[in-house]
Structure formats: C-alpha cells, structure tokens
Length: 190
Length: 190
DNA sequence: AGCATTTCTTTACATATGTAAATGCGCAGC
DNA sequence: GCTGCGCATTTACATATGTAAAGAAATGCT
Image 1 (cartoon, rainbow over the protein chains, first blue to last red):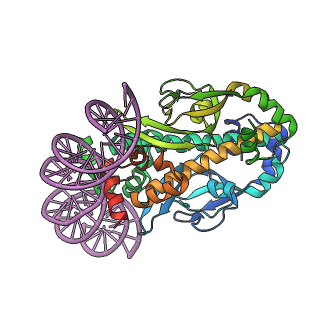
Image 2 (tube, chains in turn yellow, green, purple, orange):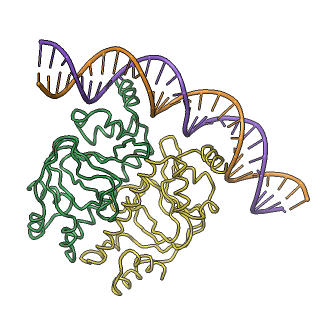
C-alpha cells in the first residue's frame, strides 16, 4: 500500500485526507500468470495498482491475430482506462504475463469521491494527461521509426523485460513477426 | 465566439462565470492556407478553437518524409496538446490546409485561471480524456484494420474532406502511398 | 481561352516482410 | 541424465506495397 501512495504522489503530491480516502478504496489481490484482469467485450469497472509483475494489453484483429499494445511493468496502473472513461466495451484485454501483486479499486467509487474534490479531480486530470502522452509517444515511435529503433527503445523502456517474457510477445509489441525480430537480432549482433 | 462556448459546453456544461472568464482569454485570428499554427521543435504556448477550416497535424521522419497524424476539421481544438501539457518541444507540426478562422488563447493563462477552479479543472480533465480516447481509437484502427477499412472510417469521420484537400494528404493519413490509395479507390469502384 | 502547375492514376519493377515449415536449443520434470 | 515441449532461429517462398517515372486529368492563373 505504501508503494501505491508513493506512486500517486510521484504524479501530484496528495494531502493526508486524500491519502486516507484512497487507502479505503484499494484492496490487495493477486493475478496468476496467464490470468486476465480485463477481457475484451466487457465493461471495465476496476482499476488497479500493479505492485509487482508484468501485464500486457493486447487486441485481436478479425483474423484472430493478437497484437500487444502495451506492457505494464510494476509499478504501474492497470485497467482498461479507455473503457472506464468512455463507458464503452473494452477492445483491449489485459493479461498477466507473470504472477502479479495488485491493489484494486472500483472506478465508480473513485468517481464518486472525486465529485467536488478538487484534488482528486486534478489527480484524474494528470492521469489522463499521462495516458495521453504515453500513447502519443508510442504512436509516434510506431510511425516514425523502423522496428530496429523501436526495439532499442523498448529495451530502454522496459529494462530486463526480455528475460521475463517470451520473444514473440516482444515481436508482437513491435508490430513485427517473430521471424523478423530474429532477423533484427541477428543483424544487431554482427 | 458563440461557437466556441457551444463547443465547450458540449463537453461539460459551464457556468456563466467560467464562460465569461473564457470569453476574455480567446482572441480572433486567421490562418492562411499553408500557414503553420505549430512548428516542430518549438515549445507550444497557445491553444485555439478552430471555427472554420481544416488543419493537419503531421510529423516528419528522419528521411524527411511527412506523415499526417490527424486532421482537425472545424469545429475543433487545435494546438500541440502534447507539448503544452508536457512542456516539451513539439514533435508534431500543425498546418492549415485551407484558410481558417480561429480563436486563440494562451495556455498559460488557462492554467492560471484553473488554479483552484474546480470547473475548469474538470473541463481540462475531460479534454485530456477525449484526446486520449481519440488517439486510442486511431491507434487501434491503424493496427487492426487494413487501409481499405481505414479509408472508409476516415470518410465517415471527416465527411466531405476529400473534396477539400489533395488525395496525397489522405494517403499520408492512412499510412499508405498515394499509389496505393489509387489502387484501393480503383478496387472500391469495381 | 489557353498555358502552366498541381494532382491523380497507371505501369513496371524492387524489396521488405510475412507465412509456413524445418531445424536447433534449452529448460523442466521425471 | 534423458525426454519432451516450448521457444527461437533459419530457410524458402509468396506477396503486398513502396518507388520512380510517365501519362492523363484537373485546376488555376493571366
């Protein structure tokens, strides 16, 4: 729980009051490797703080192929943010790639306590902005850089992740086939 | 100016007080076709309401090729949102594709008046969320759908835009070459 | 109206990357 | 220590899409 507070505080400093409010909203839980935190086609209701572990967000195209959109590496917030704020169904599933420790909360409750609470409203604004920025960053990278460079950036962004999850998840994240990732790795090491 | 108020009100209803606050912050201006509202490498300071016209947001890769990231078709908000909230340099330029009428404001001033103003804070949160959602939507479309389908969606999202801007801008938006767009259009009409 | 410029389409060709399948490697469990 | 299974790499091949260039069409300017 201290980790959660610390994590939020690194976005905006929070008052004692807000901290104790939040403390009541989050409960501890675990995700086994392979378990889903969010499933496609459902309405998201929960958000969680990922204390340890790795989660992937991925979508499936009409041919049934999976694409990894994001990795969440602790400490981080998980939950289908898009579905929560739009009240639409998820298009993106979230699945644990390792065993995970999480603290989850009902998003609806968070919305309720932020009614009229300036501080939480501001926290939510900053969270929205951060999501926006990291999406934007990934989008630009995907579009401007070749897979080579994206691979490099991925390694900086998620240090050590390659040791913890299979290569084909990385390939999917980079938007290329495992075959192609292999070719890149081969060239890299020449 | 009424259009501006109407536009913001369609996100969250605003009080008289906030409306008059805003009225003082936005001033009328125009952009000639081809003019830039935002240039790459600079720090954004302004935001604007696009009352009439079309603006494109685009980035340039290291080979000097341009990619259109978004079209803004009035009524809409323009300005390098990412740069404004991150206080980093722009990676994305914004250029008028037709003559435009705009109402611009200093983002810094907006930030100042939202200090402690719950309503504006909430407006900003919702704007951030909307930006996030439209980015997310585009990202999923780009990744899950082929250019065919994206072309269709583009036509729904920006009705009539094809009559107002050159084809190669559309191609660039779809992430394909003009040649390829031509091929798609040809197949479409069979 | 006529010329010039811009835009769109088409062709021919090159190539990057995906798919499929075979091989190789390493770790886990017995 | 052996066996099997999951994962990574490699090979061969197919193909979608980009590039370049030429031609056609449209637009705009004087």
